[in-house]
Length: 248
Image (tube, rainbow, N blue to C red):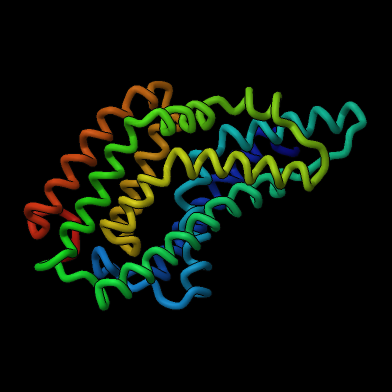
């Protein structure tokens, strides 16, 4: 007896996220050197980044993927060409891959500008704390609210932005991914600032993203998260050695 399709898609997403978390743990365990952790070569970093995004983002993108899969199946019943859900997901992850490449370039430029990893007794605490504080302030901006509303309302996007064929599905995935990047880039900036190789901070940021995008009152939690990140940013600037989970 085959599983109902929503159950199958949900199971595949959560199973994929679990596998990604396991792979991420195996590759990152013991590598956290705090803010300024070296990202390694571009190829190694890119493979790890995509795996991290699968682990962190698949649970929160599940509502959108379920809507896409249902409409794609309904269109197939009406005689239209069926588009596999993985094509949409590939576009979505491509958007986050582009963000990861941009972040890698900024990271390398910053290390070059300061002559290596920022010193915690010098500019390091100011750079990391400033990035976390900026992430908190961004939570309160109109652009954040627009992107979050898009992420929390998948039906409107799929019904009014549907594109036929695999290329169309890929474009839809990229477009939704771009909104997701617009919603969450500040939180990812905080992750880089706190230690991108830290499994602890990775889990914290993933939980915040899931809460904002999926929980029924997630949009109402945004000001609370904003205040928390602003406070954390100031804490990192003023007393980084006392921040729990921060490897200084």
